Length: 261
Ligand code: AMP
Image 1: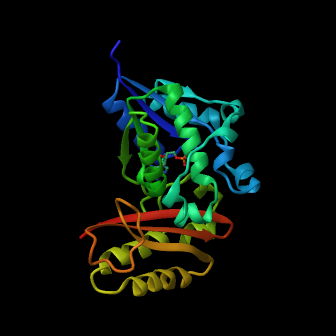
Image 2: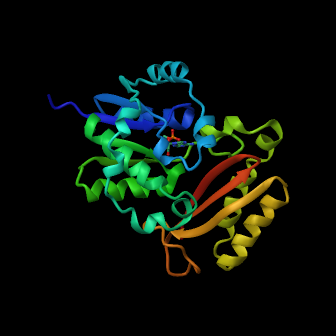
């Protein structure tokens, strides 16, 4: 009676970024539950879904070491009633990840709601690495009045600045060498935000990445950190987040950086 449950939803192939969420949940709750489910609803193409790494056994070893009490690994019956899920993501579905990955956030909202209903956590831990996803989860949680305390956690990076991601294992040696340029280009925007207009900052971001070859930029946007409204000038906004998605070879990577003015 009265024990608190901290919940960490994941798609597995765990790394130190996921484990930081688990460790925080461990510190703040009596019971820690982690889910591992590669949710087909949030993939836009079957090859990305099929290529997603699945390493359940080593994930469980890492979770045990991090102090996780229970691992929930649903099968696809969990999405059997997804066709009847009526929820409009709204604005967040029209920009950045929402615009480039149609249906992705509805799939995220569906599975997170389902997992919340099953696990019934007091707190759920989400990484700021997926900044827009965090905003969608918050919005869905309050829309359905699920009452879960959503806890945002800082992005964990490799020593060279690359944001940890399960997809990083799909980078070849050369791609992995140049991947930290994404964070360097985000830092450039952070350091220069008061000196140049938004278009100049975005152009410079692309220039930095293109100088390394191999990158294509899907989007780079400077946003209001609370609403994710896309800004064309930064003078009106104190809390900013810069969000990007790039393709490096065949691997799609996202990252972001927060700026408080
Ligand atoms: P995923 O398994 O990629 O769906 O991620 C599960 C959770 O871990 C999400 O809340 C992510 O935002 C979070 N996460 C993934 N990578 C990182 C990272 N590098 N730092 C912090 N949190 C992360």
